[in-house]
Length: 426
Image (cartoon, rainbow, N blue to C red; front, top):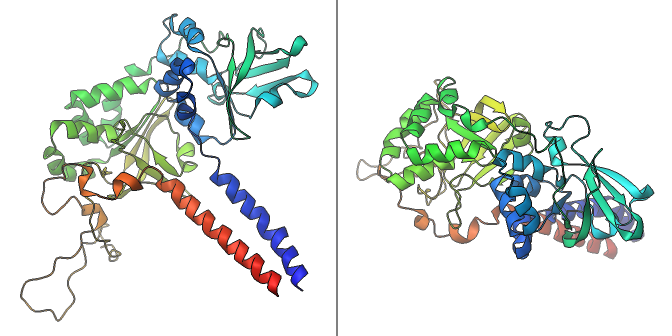
């Protein structure tokens, strides 16, 4: 009996355990990996500026063909706009894992690998594929499909087996398709698009802030996603907004945009934290995306909002309308007490007020009920001065999503081994 139980444990639970462990270890940060290699600082910089770093980090099996500073200088000296540089560098991100060992052991001596450039749909035919060929004398040549194999494998830079591989190649891959002129998305009338689709109040607020307006316009070219509150929600929030200092007003507006293009399909597959235009070193200004079927919500320590409409979804720009104003914890205080579950919503659809005191209480001084998460700006109209009000935030935020997953996995590991041990004693 004990033997049979052990067999059941191994055959059914162990594969699940291994899968969860594999999921937990997939997280990587390409810019952090490259940071310890100064000779790739220019390449690393442009991964961030073009917002390709975020796209690389969210994928679980990836190969980055990095070039050193001298090779990047040859590219940047051509005066390409950032949108063209993004296309060129997208061709250097393979949607498969090629470590140093694998690249020298390619079956039949040659392989075609899809790239992020191919995935954008901007590459006609197979021009977004990279040909990897094992040449004579141990050389490995690389080039766009149908083009010259004029770039060569140099060395492995960083490898996290079967997750991310960063390998150096001798020069930037030549591609007429990737380097072709691209439309100038910076000329798009962002506020006009918002105003025409239910976000007029937010658009006017953005126009009135030169710093935020400039940041938005400059960010479009590399890819951007905006979460604009609907007019009713923004009107109700304006008194709070007007109490902010000028720098905090700009930070708040920047917080409602992510420096990466996310289609709705991408948002629905992207549970987890995201940086925003306001993110700057210690000032995290993160928001967290959560989805449940067709419902996509955005969350901070302060409140949760829902995406209710797609205003525009055309690469490199996506703008979504939200039912409420998403609030960053860096600017507003969260309630120190967890609010109770809200009462059923009134017929007009508004969120119920905080619970009233229980019946039977005297008419003396009433005990104040805890505010609901959506209304927790603080007791007065003045917002908090900064994140100091949340003592636990400094250590809790950076890896909160990882720790939650890690904690759940660790709990499962303990449970599995306890089950295994108990079955062995039967």
